Image (cartoon, one colour):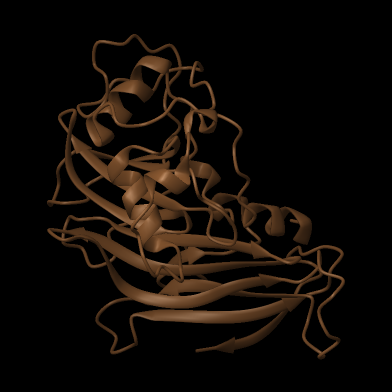
Length: 300
């Protein structure tokens, strides 16, 4: 996998309008549109059991296409009917077809007050319907209760004022029986890369990535999270797991590798080990493959 591909995975692009969702519909499932015909089966999600070499479960490895850096295994193209149903359930009818309908933001957001990180403006825009949301990922699992059939939608909310480095917020919503049963909002460009029941309680945890790109520097942060009554709750924060400086010509020559990354594992249970393991590595700017990337071999 090239570092360019990794960098681009972390580089959100602001859409000119909402992408038409007129591809193949998802296969019928309890939380999907059971009335819509489907001609294309849903590819299975990644296995919840992975050989991690030293035991345990592999959560994230930028070298492996099965655990790609930006959650490609969960990307789906929904039918136009299904997309509308999901967005209507989440946002009512308070959302825009595309960003050209945003109108006068200064007037709409008057009175926001001090807002250094922009989060208050983003929240106000979501409340006012000044958003042009897009469904980016779909995953099946048991997210709010043990051993139930639920569907998670990851939606780029795309507020009208969204700008780098966070590019607005991401809405993660769980559906059961066609209804919203849980939701969470992340400020930033968020994707899921893993769905796995780590503690054996019948409820799935998520490995969640956030991508940032600014001034030629691309970075990914990772955490393990699970849905609770209050929304999406972080169980473990790995912090930054990838930094790619290959697109920057202005950073100082401080001796740092062009690309630094982490491979993440959940350790086997019942052995007295810490819950998670991190193996760090580095790579030159040109490419990063298992053959030429230099893993430090260290864990933390």
